[in-house]
Image 1 (cartoon, one colour):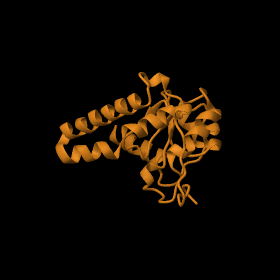
Image 2 (cartoon, one colour):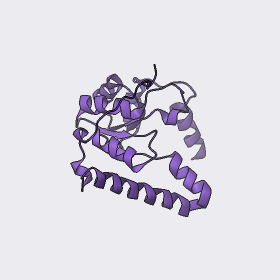
Image 3 (cartoon, helix red, strand yellow):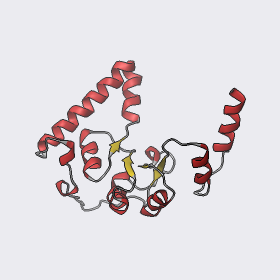
Length: 174
């Protein structure tokens, strides 16, 4: 079994970039849901729909792959608008507060992933620390929703948000 797992891992993760043409093979060998992470463009989101992918995660991998990549909240509205309900849109990267979660959900994400904050909590106080971070984020989300006059996540919508551009601010990746 270990040899089979090693062989499969070598096929799926050969140490080179993956392409869209590999999704057909993946679909033939896996009948469960397939979710692609790292989507940052409308074009890639539409391709995911064409290939019958079940979900996409808008992610810049926490900014650790490329230091000048697009911010996920900046690309989320266009991607969510372009694919509508044809695919489940989720968001990862840069989520640090309940207000960040509120923004992502209001802009079209169906789910939000958290990495670094949970790992920090885990590092500080183990499982209890990770739970405390999650509890704090949920409390912060509840507070942000209250300030916005929202009682249910289902009430979140883009019109609740307003982009503010301050003098001297630059957009991502310029």
